Amino acid sequence: MLHAAVLRSPYPSARIRPARDETAAAMAGVAIVLTAKDVPRNTLATDVPGQTTAVGPLRATLHVLAEDRVRHQGEPIALVAAETLELAQAAVEAIRDRVRSHAGVFTPRPRWHRARRRARHGQSARPVGGSRAATSPAR
Image 1: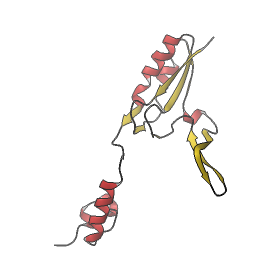
Image 2: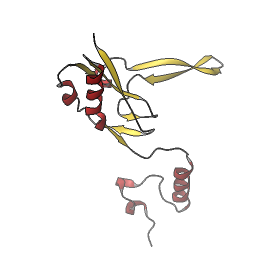
Image 3: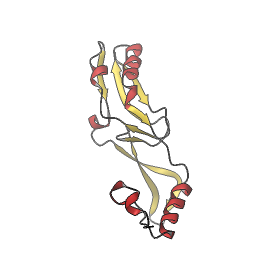
Image 4: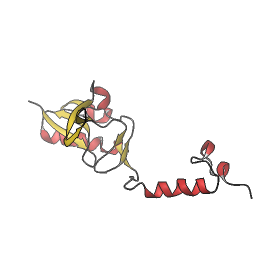
């Protein structure tokens, strides 16, 4: 019998690093490590409760396993199956470093103010070539 463990994101917003599953997959007793790239049709369509439109219920598309970034705390990232629950949990710990936290966007206001300030000074909304100097007004 196999036991499963799920690697879930401890962060509300994070990037997922490229796969480093070889360490966990090579552990004795670990049967398989599954990530989003291993799951065909990794999306699930579901109705949003209480939300309807003129043409019918509102549907949301969810990822079964997070692919490149985490959108909420607790989002599943990887599944591990092993001979014992302890081995499965140890394999999850071995791949936990795949998740790197980054600042989440919790309100549109800070970005909105920056874009408005740039527009007021005749600057483009986005820096050209990734440089702030490229969009700075001439003095």
